[in-house]
Length: 540
Image 1 (cartoon, rainbow, N blue to C red):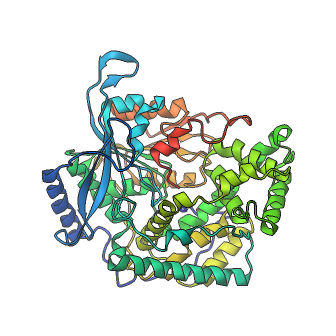
Image 2: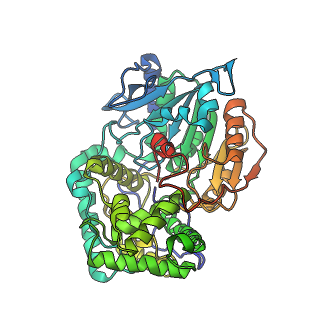
Image 3: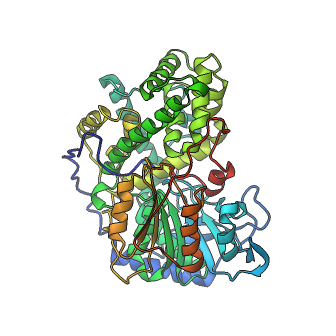
């Protein structure tokens, strides 16, 4: 997800010109018709249940899949239906610390990995990872592909073979000609979304994702939902808690999006770009401390010069004809999400500057095999974020705000603009963002997890969500920036996660954990446990 909080290093951004009237006078977010429609759909789903069978493609032994029908438009629950694909691995009921001890089953744990546009169909496989075995012993692990995400009535905005445009530039201070080119591309992309998806496009948004979650709860036979959401999935969870407070059992929100309606989603992205600059600085400082390994410079400024040199060379001569400055930037953006990616990125940059482009090509070159999946994810991302809220329709607003921000945060600012600019030219009806909020006693306590230097979902979002969800608990990984911390290598965080999901215990309103160790420069590529992200399904 390219969305989050608002302040740059220079202070508060002045964002006039954002107050746009919702297209077609969008109805209230928590409309009575949609709530009634959700109740009708949930009752049908409870009666029908889920008929689990073989999963699409290869899947591990024990994992089964099914589909649940949900209304395209909840105001018309008897109208067009779409199918969501669901995966499940039954609770093992075996204590990983004592094989003779049988663990009582606590129901289903549903996971949303974020995005928007990500799937958690592979999530049930995570039960084999040591950090998750205790949770897998008590819960059926349930993943799903949200509406629009293949194979759940997939959306598309352009032909997959046209999706990857490589090599591509990545100017940190784009000129007027380049801006005009990107405006034209954004208009074409928005038009393609409308043409390829038709009138149903307007129903792919976060409020319907939360309503789908309640229908899935009913189809699973659960009277109350146990849910874990990461990144954008935290926003879906927060909407669910607000819309269906009596249907909640336990909820973990990991790497929280700021739910303030005034920030969804334009202002969120400005804050995210500012936060990525700070995390990019963390990465450069780490590389400089390991100059003996990488030879990229002994100061963060020197590392930046090495990166800029590589970008200039790739602009003139793309590596393998596929990796230009745009692909370089995308590759190093991942270092802003996960610090376990730092060694592989630094090693690839070092090798490239020494004449070996193979590691960089291996990390950065687009893969035709993944084009269909990537295009689908991009289409869902655009549909959800553009449908969720008003956006500035005048590019001059975007230009002013991001030109100002790029002076202090050049690394990600303009790439974030291009990812979201189709929303300026969106024709589908917009929603009015829901005022996320729960009062004392309305829901069980919610557990919020956050890393203090997370760039993708800046820490201010976790603080705001904590304020809005009464009786919630915030666990902070101090001085750390990896995006998504639950079930990872931090034993302190995992102890709080296990205590809450397995026993319902929370440490009060606030708790903190020491950071995970910095990655070692000799570590192989990927995160600490290589399969963890593939299993959970990364949310951006």
